[in-house]
Image (cartoon, rainbow, N blue to C red; front, top):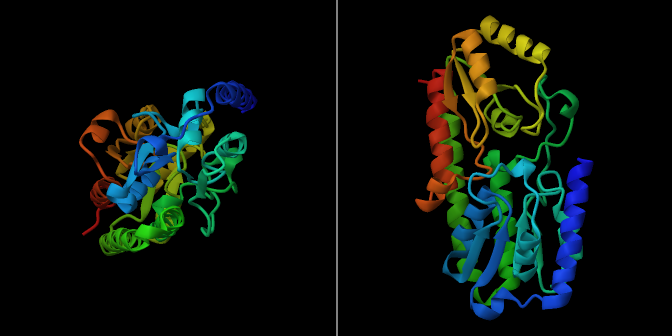
Length: 309
């Protein structure tokens, strides 16, 4: 953590020098659209859907990069400073954001904390180790919270562009309806499953989703993908899987599935992807994948893994 703080501090210092030399001309001067920089894929999907043709929305994360380990470069910080809007999940998901915003020289930059108004849950799995009880930043995986995030983004568009407030009201309303439909699909599909237990061979990301639909959730790692489980943790997890008769172990996107593979091998369980949608791979970006596509595929995998009717 200290190394990351030092690296980000160095990036901020380098960027400040660059600001002084260049003056950071606004991207808005080169387009009539609202320039929006977002920090992770769910925010990107919300902003591009709500902003429509009135906005130029970009995702700060390069394709395939795991966001928990992401550190903004001087170029990234320049992009944020040149934007009209900077949308981030919150201080627990992007702890570096506060420093970047504080150092920004663009007085017209609208900073949007998408978690505003969301009641954060805490990591409660017995497998979260030192992170147990820490705030869980994966709020988009409760679709009611995702609606709050979308409305925060809508409000920001309206504040920036009052002339088209009716447009943003309409597009945000459509996005909210899609989230409601997705929520109903999950509730209906997961109401009658043979198993109520998600065993996740990745970091603690699906606590919100499990709680919303009355599922038990056990993750092999803590809130960060670099929180390696101990041999004792893995042994305990294997014993729990055997005791509960779990037949599928889920693995996460964009990181090595070696932990899930190890657990599955020891228990003769099968593997299925459960994608938290932090970010997308290059091929997904190229074909324009949406948050709803990822969540729909997750539901199909959950139905298979939990034996839902």
